[in-house]
Length: 140
Image 1 (spheres, rainbow, N blue to C red):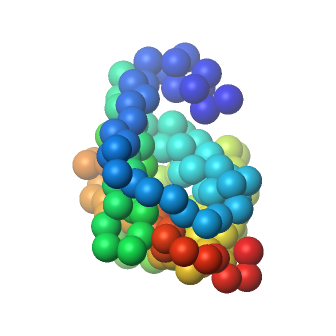
Image 2: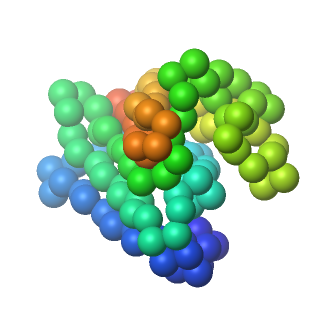
């Protein structure tokens, strides 16, 4: 679904996966849902002919995954609030979502003992990053 939407708008999807990521003990379905939510948002807020990159690497005792886009970006005062339930950015398209995807993603990542955050500026795209510790997940 994400690939098809991106292709219709000529958005380039690329991956940059380090070869030494290692193993993570996680609920695969929940991690896929987090990635789907981040990718769906990236496609929604990236203009035609844009670019989205998914990267993953190992850092200390965790895997770090980032979904980076060339989209519209997010104002600094909205960056914390977008992880709250039913929140959307002021520049968003409210008819295209419920405002639950990032809140659920944060909860799923935190249940795995990880963190999630965004780095962004209006007009400069966004990078959503989350971590998953290597080892046993709690509460998943």
